[in-house]
Amino acid sequence: MNKFILLATLYFSAVLFACKKEEKCSAGKGGSLTISAFPQHHGRAIYNLPNYPDTIYVKYNTQESAGFSPVNYDTYFVGNSGEDHVHLEGLKCGDYYFLGAGYDSTINQRVVGGMPFSTDQKEGGIDLNIAVTE
Image 1 (cartoon, rainbow, N blue to C red):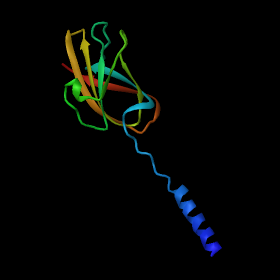
Image 2 (image 1 turned 90 degrees about the vertical axis):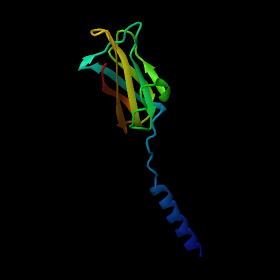
Image 3 (image 1 turned 180 degrees about the vertical axis):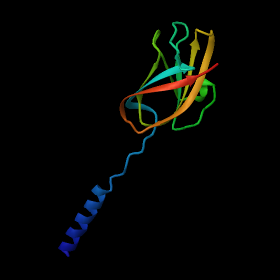
């Protein structure tokens, strides 16, 4: 009987440690991933202006647009004046929808555009171009 209990204990221990559940990515804040988002209008960089910085609105756990209203997004990131990108810091792996908005000084118009994005990467950096238009 003791051998049976010992074998059963060893078997269930082996199953418990062998069946390590794979962690599913769930988008959001609190991670170690930084995305550098580059808004581009017809392939040309949109630079952050002192009075009109580029802004990237972020919707978590979706590949679908939440429309053009900022209130429909989970968070947003604002670019630094003079830079051609916006740092989206502290993200986790997962599915996102990014909506970028900026001002193209060459045509004196606001430009907006969005795209779905998905990654399994949990840390480090990713460069991402976001096409924007009038």
